[in-house]
Length: 621
Image 1 (cartoon, rainbow, N blue to C red):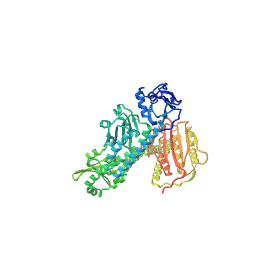
Image 2 (tube, rainbow, N blue to C red):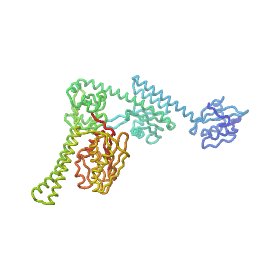
Image 3 (tube, rainbow, N blue to C red):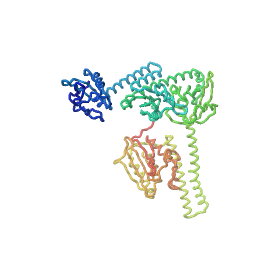
Image 4 (cartoon, helix red, strand yellow):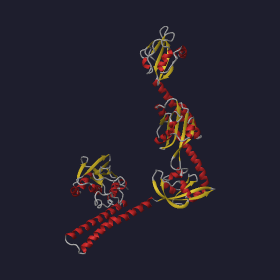
């Protein structure tokens, strides 16, 4: 028994078990809504005042307590959210003392330790069952029964989330007890779906969403970062406290292992059946196919996968066999539809790699029969490069049609007028100015195209050497002084003190800064301000050039560094000077240094284009 003070938390009774007096600490232990018992109160009344319950103050109740606590034996008394240890002991002649100690914390710790010990034994047994090769479903049912006993529940469920062909998930019961048998036969209660969405423990009281289940806790079971099942425990007399929920947190990983074993064995059994029926046919087909080839059974399970498909999708044969064919698709082209249209015609679909990347593919599906069983052979070709080339050709044609024809038309028209003698003096010089300006535009476009192609081909001169990034930026701004002064644009500097030493190609750095700064000047309003900032970020330097112009449209941000992309200009002729290649060159040159480039444009706050460069360029072999 817990050691208790002799005269502190005690109640002294006479030979008739009537209260004589209370110790000074006894009143602090009483239930909050109870007044201290008056002298003459029975032993039953005093105990009821401790527990906060109602006890009939009769001799029978008092007699039962005296017999139960005879010989100084201690017992626990629970009530009002607390636990007391009480015991009777002789006092002065003709007196008996009721000793009381608040052992709420000690009992809580004991229960918590006992729960964890029981759960550890359960987890050990589950691991043994998994290694022994028994039926995982039997082990899951036994685990559910023991978890219910551990939590003092009378209802429980272990379910599995199964993926449907349309990509949605539906729960399937592996083991159900008590009220969960009926609850799971209907649509799943919202508390289950909430736990699935959050992948976090969810508790619920009795109510419409958990009708008839009482106090409930739902523990999601996850495998490889995705939901695979759930554990539901219900019908506990008291709410699940945080300590109990924390204790139960160790159970889902063990259940995930058993669910995974169960799924793997089912897949292995199905794959074995499918492969046994199609092995000879698959080998004959795959020996002659160079494109990606996937063979699926009538149930939509992958039973064949050639080397080209491995390279295309990133799955190894051993990993993909037995998986749903739908895992390779990313759009509405469901396996059922492809199988139904299995006439060998080629059609375009969106396919998905193992790491989730979506790419365009052409697929033709043919139906064959092996030993009377239908198989579907899908021949796939990745057309990403084909579409990219087609898009580039289309963009190039559009550019030639607009960016080359417009200045050429203007140039030839001006020269025709001058050459024909229709103009003289100042008008002739004006036409020649127009011709020269358009000629410079053509030269910039051709130069940018050649630079970009040389960068992509690795043929551009690139000589990284120690240099001062700050000096390069200041020279770039100085070179643009006539433009900034003409628009009244101010430049605000924010550079760390001292030289900004970096290993880079100074000429290419100047080209990067020039293209970005020229855009900032072009889109700045009259009298505006351009901020040039350099931030040290560990082993890299981040350059930010921000203007206060109209900003970059949100739908343009993701493509602004692509070829021939130009945002809407603030003035009719503001973007006419650009070729649509400057930022593409910036991205390519920054990548050549091993850095990265980007832009942000909060609505109404202008635009900031930034590029990060490592202090030491990593030379690529």
